[in-house]
Image: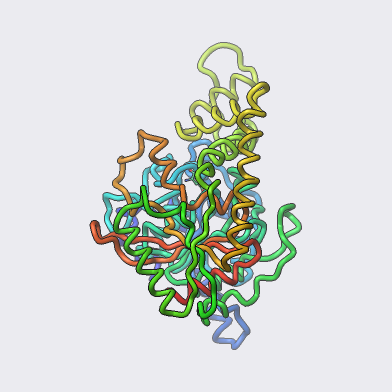
Length: 452
Ligand code: GLN
C-alpha cells in the first residue's frame, strides 16, 4: 500500500530519491511467512520505513543529496539500518534532504526540492524534509532523520509530524555521513508519539563503532508514550524562545498547549536562558568548522564523482579542486569556506574558541533551567512552512528558522516536536517542542504523550 502511495503522489512531493521496491517487498514477504509459521517477531516487524539519504545502506545508493556522491554505493550498513533489518522492517527507500543536511527547507538538494504535502508551494522544512514529507503524505508510517541543529524537529513541525532528536550518543551515528560530529544525532519521524518511541527503542543503544555512544538502555520509552501523563510534572516555558519574532498563529497554539498541559495537571513555570540569544551565532561557527573538516574526505579520489581539469597539469590538487567545484552546491561551499576561515591561524581563538565558550554558557543555562523544571517547552520553529524560494537567496533568514532547535544540539539534550494544531492565519501545522535533560528521553515521551 505504501509503495502504491509513493507511486501515486511522489511525482509531486519528491520525498524519495530512491525507492527500494523489490527488497521492501521481499522483507514484507519474509514477515508474512514468519507470521504464518508462528515465529516470534519484533513489534515493528513488517512496518515499512523510509531512511534519510544521509544514512548509508547496502544495496541502495546513498547520495547525501549531493552530486559529489552520485553513483556511490556504501560497502556497509549504518548501525541503525542493521537494527531495522534485524527487526524485519522493510526499507522503502532513501529520502531527500538539503545537500549534506545543510539547510532548513530541502531546497539545497542537488536533486530538486521536496514539497510540503499540506501545500505543494511550501517547503517541508529541512534538512530532513524528505523524511517528514513522506510521513505526512502517508508514503511511509515511519522515517529516520538526522538532527544537527533541528533537521528532524523543524521538518516535523512544519508538516504536522512527530520528530525526535535523542540524547547525543543515545543512537549510534555509525554510518550517518558526518556533518558536524559534535552535534549530529539520528532519530525517528512518525505520525504519533508512540510510533516514534517504538522506533527509538529499536535504533537506540550502545554501539562500539561510535566512540560517542552511551552505555544506556532505552527500554520503557514506548510505555512512557502510552501512559503519557503530566500530573505533577514541572514544565518550564523558555522565556527567550517565544513571543517577539514568532508568528501569531504559532504563539496562539503554543499558549493553548500550555493551557491543555495545565488542565492535565502540569505545573507551568517560566525559566530564563539568557545565553540562548547567542546560540545561533555560535552554532554557525562551530557547525561549519566541523563541516570543513568532515567534508575534506570528498576529494575525487576516495568517493563518487571525479572531475578532471579541462587543461593544464593533472595533479591531485587540481583534480580535487575540479571535483569539489563541480560536485558541491553553493550552500556546502559557503559553509566549507566559513569553517575554514573560522579555524584558520589568527582567527581560531576569536571565532571557534569564542563559540566553544558560548556553548558552555548554553549548557549552563540548561542546567539552571532543569534545576527549576523537569522538562522545558517552546514552539519548535518561529513560523509555519514558508513558500518555496522565499528564503533561498537569503542565508541569514534561512538560518533564523533554527533559533529554537539549535540550543538542544549545543548541549546534547534530547528534544521532541509534536503537532500543536494549525495556525490561524494560514491553516498550516505548528510544532510544539519539549526538551529534557540528557539521558531523560523518557520524560519527553511522557510529556508529549499527554499533550497528543
Ligand atoms: N538547518 C540547520 C542547518 O542548516 C540544521 C541542519 C541539520 O540539523 N542537519 O545547519
